[in-house]
Length: 377
Image (cartoon, rainbow, N blue to C red; front, side, top):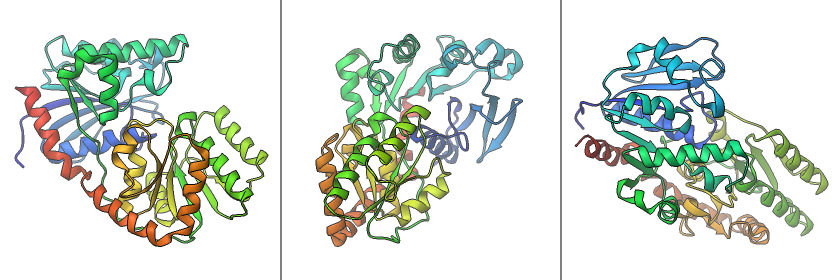
């Protein structure tokens, strides 16, 4: 592919080591893919462990401005203080071809630099009002409104699944004309599935209620009561109160010997855990996409997943064992079926790996390039 003459400002809350979940993985992979296509990119990202701001170079020509994640640069609701940033870094006030927003807390800066002239591309990794259940807390309602204003003011909306488009169609059908569904991709892993124990399953992700971790623990209790012996490793972090609740639930159900919490781990370590597990369980009650499942499929790990939202578009019964989202009994029965049918798991895993190949960033690159070129027209 030839170099395209584009100079893009990317605004993201997560990039490289400052990555806490699927959005960070997606933004990082996307930025490096566009870099390989020859797109010039300047990235602004908060840094939790930095005390002073600074520039670094990444990839072929990615300029990254890291800003300390503190009250000097970020104000109410985590919104960036555009006036402070532009005063300290006047070089940002240049003519960009495109402003690419990955996160709502950069909207003041995006609007200021766009001036109503430079097009804004908004990559939506989740609709906050949908993800958080339209909770009434004033700060959350303020964030919902900021996101919905950005949907209105941007020139192009990238959604990551048909499920998310259906939500937009029901709530803001007037924006469908400027919307495109483009899945997020994965970097192809070097790890391959080599299970160490036929009855040791893995959960990877945030510990929040709609991810279905509680359902998974309840299913483990159901399985233990049936006399089966399987183990579950939980990798990920969440709010302290909810993580404490899950740990108490494990103790209440007398599952301490069979369910282990391992906290947050680096991506390389997560991939090793995936490669060793009997299967990767994705029990989400709601899901915009399902990047963890896709990463597991790429390694060749068998996936046991709910049929929730965008997850169901990636993980079908042709390449995984699936169950009804929120149905604890079905989840338990599906895990038992996984233990009883190792040959079925292997064949599903092989098909899953083949399907995941279509989502490698290099395979998706032409579609992203076309979207950028269409915006520039």
